[in-house]
Image (tube, rainbow, N blue to C red; front, top):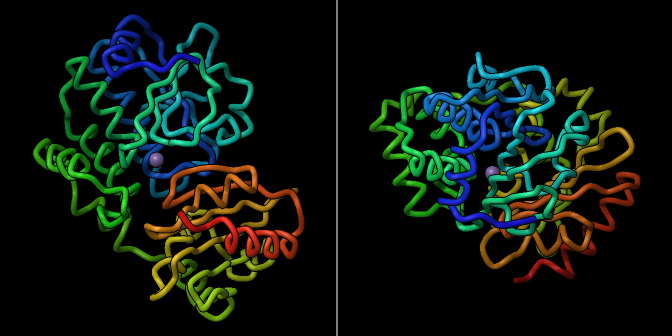
Length: 315
Ligand SMILES: [Mn+2]
């Protein structure tokens, strides 16, 4: 794998055509917003570009990709992935794709592409995509500004998380200046709770496993619970941020039972290292937010995780 500078990535994109853009599994606002921004920016510059349809996209993001997708990558496409730290983060149906360029902001990443443009200081991958498009001479229009604002606002928890930088605010100001529908996007992303999500939050308050003097918490979400509460993917998106919001909690983990595995999502406040814990469990991510996949029962996952959090969490 070869690391590129922003200028080199811009030159590469200028040289190529017929882009197919790839997003990560359980797609969030950053991967989906970055893809929409890149796709629209490349089209504005006269390129042919599509986003490869992600089967896991959820309702509230569907509009963002309207008119931009195609069902699958085709022979001869130039594949670019956004916000994807490792090939394990790809949906199963994308795992055979040979991706040329990765644009990303994850620090503990694997080199699964030929080329990579990575900036771990960027709060959102969208910021990096925007910088490259600027370098190429693209101008933010309203749909691009909406996509970029979605990427940056969601990955910073509406500019509240520790990853938020001056550049995040600068980019957001540029989005607003370009006509981004900031209020409408904030309403959907941060001011709206489904009943399912509220039911899950109630369950977490009653049933989460607190330890280490209530500074750490594990939320085990079994398939049975998902069924009982009638939860959708949207209901559960970023739910690990919720137990993290409880006063005194330094690290919060959610464990989600899937077919044959348990998905761990871990959040930490500054001074604690979620990536270090997840690395011990075969995963990775950022200090403030990281993940891993565990192949065991829920009970085993809970005790393994508890031990690892107690041992490996301090920076
Ligand atoms: Mn991201």
